[in-house]
Image (cartoon, rainbow, N blue to C red; front, side, top):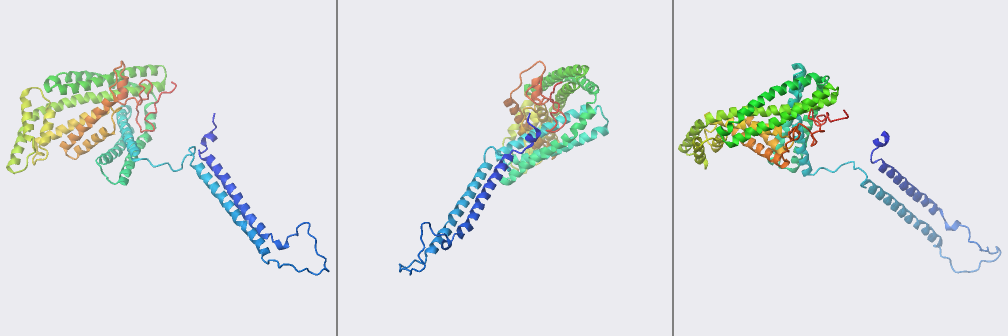
Length: 513
């Protein structure tokens, strides 16, 4: 086994050793060069010993006349010694440069980690921002799903900090989605500002996750000291929801004849997915009860969280059937009045000389024909009416404003429910459009909000089609993966989602239990 000291050594420690060796080599070469300079300069030919085999002349002998000796001979020897200084200095400099080049090459070798990693490309930053948005949105949604089960075992004062954490995380996420929506619309335009916008998005998402992570351990301590009470709460919620799901199926059946095949198919699809989640919940509740009876605490907690996530999503779908059915009835009662109001707005615009949108008259005529032709989708009819007149004076008053608000809320709810129960496949674009629809609806722009919600739903449906619908299985595990109830593509072994951010939401990963 590798020791902790070896594991803790920085990767560039070897590079530091080579640097020290190179520095020592440079110092040695430079020192030798400087020491050689005075030695060479001290070699004076005038004081040097005579060459061997030379016989001195007798002192009494008169000096024989000879050719005059060049007085510059000693200076020539002096120049030779001085001339040696330059080559030595050159050699020293060359050594220094060679050692420096070696060090530079060593530091740049592939085996050494750079201290300053390369900046992310715009495409990479874009990908990171998308991933951060999806992860943060999943964390907030999972935390919102789990908290009601925990709240059933606690008093309001105990639950309040967790609600505050979710609200804070939701606020950070909303700000991140607003930044992303502006970014996707081309704002800001400066490349530097766009990079900073992506940094801000990632930072907001990280803060949302941090807030939830900070509370995750505390919630576990409060929830899982004993599995029995939490299991009883989940089983009670399951029984109540199963009865409601049977009622939702009975409610959805006649919608095909009353409002047309498109409405009937949408409602039937909701009921089908809800039943799939309930089948999954049944299996996991049984596993949790069995594990609890055997004293396998960790396994019981994990299976129970799987069941709770599926129950929460089934509840969203069942409630959606009831809510959409109610809105369909309201819309059907409102369509004739909305048609009359729209025709009055067109007539007033013509009298005032205001340009009328092209196709507005044809739209109203087509909707009026649908009223007598048979079953039709009243929400779709109101959507067409309000869109056709949105730019005319008077389109935001009276019955038309009521119709626009009803359509916007219905479209936003439908998109929200679809994203919630298919989030394992839905990407950042659909989620961002949905967040923009909610903001726009809050700003009292219902027609624009409805358009954004429809775009969000269409984008989410494309993501699911591209991901692929799961094959039906006996326990509904594949649907739970698509819905994000399980975090991995391994339904039997993947961890269930939990309250928390990216650092803690998969903490129930299977162990050795």
